[in-house]
Amino acid sequence: MSRGNTEDLDSNLFYRTFFRGLDAKTNEADPAIEPDLDKIADEEYQKTNLIDSFGLRLRNDLEFRKLNTYNELCSLFWSMLLQGYFA
Image (tube, rainbow, N blue to C red; front, side):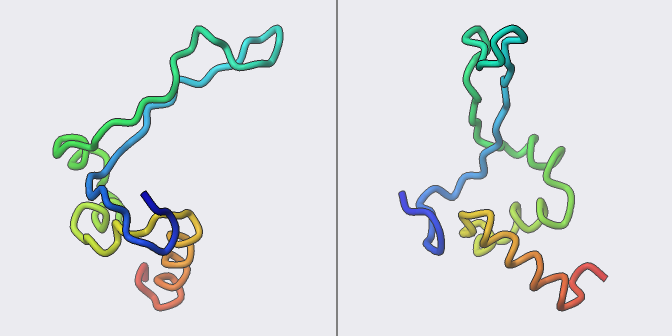
């Protein structure tokens, strides 16, 4: 699977549940904490959580989903902002 300026082969939307924690004594990752968990964003999750302008675009715009990097997303955001998309 390629990343950055290429189309991702998986068209599903995912979200991540974080189980992060540090051991207070050692300041190291606590082995008792489970690893992060990626899940497919089902329709119910999307209706509840993807409700802002970017979430709606993720749900409805397949071209928008091809953005794979933070740089690509920020570049699009700033170009939209400069064009008055959020006005």
